[in-house]
Length: 505
Image 1 (tube, rainbow, N blue to C red):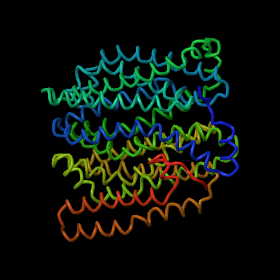
Image 2: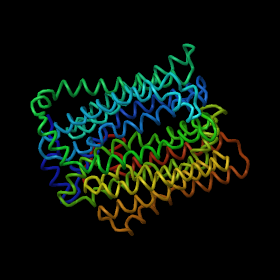
Image 3: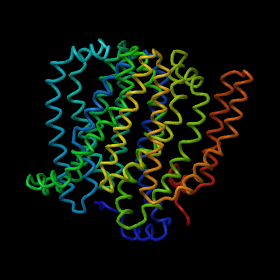
C-alpha cells in the first residue's frame, strides 16, 4: 500500500528546486483523477443535448431544488471532520477520523428522515415547488450516501489511491445518465425521474468506492479503530466542527441560493436555466479543478512543513489560470448563441446566464483548489469570514433582483458579488503562501493578453450581424487552437492533459 505522503526523493527534489520529479508525481496523481472525471463529463456533455429535449427547464429546476437541499445537508453530514483525515502523521489517527465521520453521517441521515416526512408540505409550499411533494423522503438516504462518499474520498486522497475514485466516478456517470435517458425515453420525463436517477448514481459511486476501500484496507481499518481514540480526536480537531462546519454550511448554502430563491421569486423554470448554466460553466472545475484540489491539498500539507509552499502554489495558480481564462472569456461573448445551438432554442436564456457568470467562474475555479491553504494552516476563522461574506452578498444580490422582478438582474448581481468576494480570496490565498503581488499581476496580465485578439474578432463579427454559427465556429476553433498551443509549448500543461513525462527542467 502506498504511503500517505510522497516518497522522500520526490520531496527533496521538490523542496529544493521544484524539479521535474516532484512535478511529475503531482501531475501523475492529477491524471489518475482526471481520467475518470473526463469520461464522466464527456458522457454528460454528449447526453445533455438529448436530455434538454426530453425534459423541460421546469423538470431540471425541480432537480436543482432537490440537489440544493441535499448539498447543504451533506456538507455538514460529517461535521467537516473529513478534512482532518488528511492531516495526522499517524495512520491510526486517520483511520479513527474516518470511523468518526461514518458514525456522524449515519446519525445525521437518520435524523433527516422524520424531519422531511413531517414538514414536507411546508417545505414544498415555501419553495413554490408543489411537484417536489413525494420526493423529499429521498433526502435522508441521499445525505447518507453522499456524506459517506466524501469521507471515503478524503481517506482515498490520503492513501493516494486516486484510481479508485476514477472508477467510482465513471460508474456513477453511467448510472446517472443511463437512468435519466431511460426514464425520458421510456415515457417518464419528469423532475422526479431526474431526482431518482441522481440518487441512483450517487449510491452506485459510494458503493463502488466503499467496496474498493474495504477490499484493500479492511485490515488496517478494523485493527486500528478505537472509541477512546475517536473521542480524543473529536477534541483535537474541534476547530473543524466549530469553524469549518459553519464555514462550509454558509459556503454551500450560498452556492445553492439561486436554485432555492429563483423559484420563490419567479418559478422553477428559472432555476432550471440556472442549473444547466451552472453545471456546464463549472465543468472545468469538475474535469480538472477538483482533481488538482485533492492532490494539491495532500502536497501542500507537505510543502508547508518543508518550506516551499510558495513555489507549489504559484505553479498551480498559473496552470489553473491557463486552463480556465481563455474559454470562459469566450463564453462571455457567445454563451447565449452556443446554448441555443447545442441544447435547443428553449435554453438560450441559460446561455445568457453563462455570459453573466463567466468572469466570476474564473475566480472561483482558481480559488477553490487554493482554498485548502487556509485549512493547512488551520486558519479556519478566515474561511468562516469569507463564506459569511459570500452568503450575505449573494443573498442580498438575489433578493434585490427578485424584488426588482428581473431574473437576469438577480443573476448579474449574484455574479458581481462573487467577483468581489472570490477576487479578494484569491489575493489573500496567494499572500498566505508567500507569492509577491507583482508576480501574480504579471501572470494574470499575460493570460488576459492572449484572449484580446479573439475578443476583438468576435465582437466585430457580432456587430457586423454575421450568423451565430460563425461566432460559435470561430470561438470553438480558437479555444481548440489555444489548447493545442499550450500542449505544444507548456510542459506542465502537457503533463496534466496528456500524461507525457517531463524530460527536464
